Amino acid sequence: MENRRGNWVVTPIVLLSCFVGLIFPADKQFLLSTYLDSNPIESLSNPEPTWGLKLQEKVVLRSVYKAWDLNSTFVGQGFLEPSLILDSKLVGSAMIIARRALIKTWSFNTHLESFQKLYLKELQLSSRSMMSIALERRPDKQTKQSLGISGLRSQIDRGALYSYLEGQAFLELWRPLTSTLRSEIKLTLGQARFNDLPVRELTDSSTVFIVEGKDQKDQFGRLTIHLRHQGRMIYGLALTHEIVASNSIFGEAKTWLVKIYASQRMGKHSYLHLVLQGMDKNYQHRDLNALNLFRDPEEIIQNQIHCQLERVIDPNRSIYLQYGYLKNETIFNQWFYEKQILEVGLKLSL
Image 1: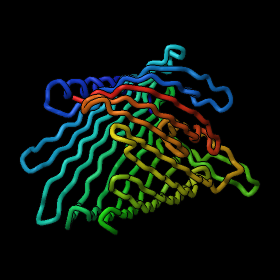
Image 2: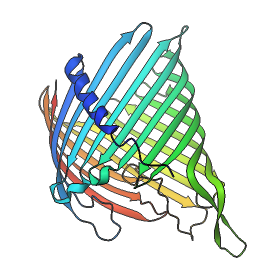
Image 3: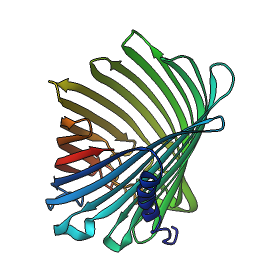
Image 4: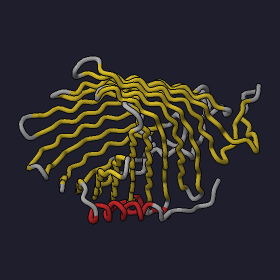
């Protein structure tokens, strides 16, 4: 495992979102809300419900630099939980998408993302950085074909720093089925390498032993089929199947994921947004439990119910009420925690 470092990274990203919003002409949105979290520490058996305050600034910047079209999004968030003050945190994220036209319908795309989360408790940091490049063809506004590669680095601070690297190659196809219905097929092949996570193997006597000097490596294939209707009502269905092969017995798994979403205008000034998601993850050795310190249970979304009702006051202001339910895997394989979050807030756009 690595030594602790870089805990200060999240602060510049939060400050950068504020700086960009003040200096450059951009679309800015501010959000202030209060929420009730039934299980803020992701406990398996002893949840400690608490209320908190959230402050968020989101800045969207669009520009053209020479032959490049640039779209940037910066988000800074602060979560304050007075009764569990050490669970309070800062979250910062940045996303930059650059597109350069080549010939006719072809373009070259670059996608950069950075995410950091800093807990007040011992200044523990969770971070993720991703970069992808792709060739894209758009013969018309509704059709897209994309072929590319991406790399990701993720790290989690638990007193020591646990990190892994991931590389992918992907093929993505979008095409219209009707004037309002589009289909997407995405195939991804990749590999993940875990730093200082020794391989676990199984003997004939069903005893687990550690292979020293050999880190875990996973190879995976993922197929997603997505249907999206875009009309007065927006709704869609996505089905994903993933197979993971690993040199460690605790890494091998097969996963099915189903996601259903809808967004509907309710009357003249109100909107309803709904997301339902369920995951079935089957490890090859379901009778064995494993500890995975490389996983952040708060970041993965496996089983989810999300419902938001938004009321527009005027073009620049709206209020919302939302309910969320999560059931995610903890740092232990096949052990799940549950939480519910009720939130009410105000959005301001500038």
